[in-house]
Image (cartoon, rainbow, N blue to C red; front, side, top):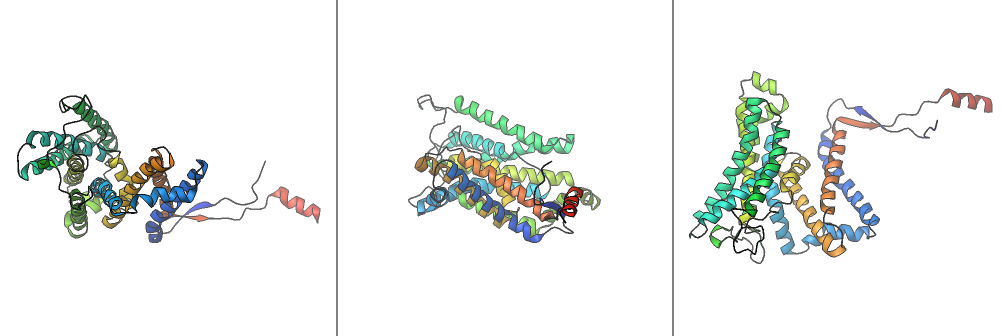
Length: 373
């Protein structure tokens, strides 16, 4: 039997959770992701320093790149803000992606109906329609959980695929542009239903301000209102909340419907903003990435803002790596996966510490020592 000359570390339960590692865990996860990324670049025959520079620095080395960073961060920030509300209440909504797609679908449908009119109200109608679509889509798992005790993880995940196929059906069918040379996309939206640009020379639109406003409102809601306190209590101990008289079902509706509204707004903002029409690839997975953003930001509004910018940079880095280094676009998704993996791994250190225990001397080793003497 082969024995190692050193002892492997063991996990030992802390007497109380470490506040230091609660905030150090995301930093450790990012550092490990960068280290693993450098090894991947080396494995692909690329200079690790050049690879990391291309991935994380080159996309934002000018004002246009910074504007694009904010554009990509906005939908994830909206979704992650709503998800943080759900996760605080221990409601595991994995359906932000589907809610975003439904917002994009019905926001586009409304935009196509009213875009020939002048004024600001057509844009408001499109954004409102997308938000309501996301709200109603999130209402399905809320009803199933409250009245049929159905696990919201399963229902929200499955509804994501239903939403995706509805969108694909729409762009290949009723919303398909008849003058679009048979491409599966809607007609381009008129100016009356497109979000105004707030930085000349870039594509940065007012949707980024919607995201910041949503973060601010949810921050106040969680930290300064009684309903925010109720959500936290339900999340920590649902039975204690019920004993205190809190209406758990109403809180589930509130959290899920708010999240659906924000995700639907994100989808509507995408089609009326940088895309300008409904296309099958309206989302590269913003709703799923928002889950990582929420946990990487520790469910705190400031942390979520920073995490959404980092995740947007990962998306841009994947595109830049494909263009400049000839690497596959999927490398961006690999970085997202590594970040989530290392975050979950690092979170273990919040409740546990690594302990290196001295390996006890075996009887065989003890006899050998005696014979040698």
